[in-house]
Length: 153
Image (tube, rainbow, N blue to C red; front, side):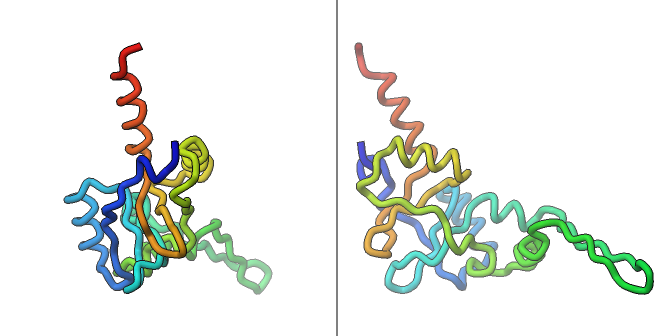
């Protein structure tokens, strides 16, 4: 089975200038795990996920500075700059993942499921010729399990 058979083709998207509050309301209202961010021609620019929005509310771990022998030593946790940028983000372009995991419509569902697990990616935009043609999520794959369980043996 291919992604095109299980993906959501009627994709709700956001524009780069969409504010964070609107992103959150749209995701809640539409029960979405993420929103592809597209330009005016439907080309994928990035992806905003629930995790991105939750990260905005998390505590930022600022670098620690201390003096040592007349100099300054910085103890910076990995990803500190990203944390600060996301905490201050006001729109989709600032909070989105700029290089999200993507798949094509003809990829096998098994391969996509494996990629979801390996990359901790949900949802995954389905892209063809640079344009978003669908979205596949964990929920789409779980639906397959529910349908196959209903079939008589």
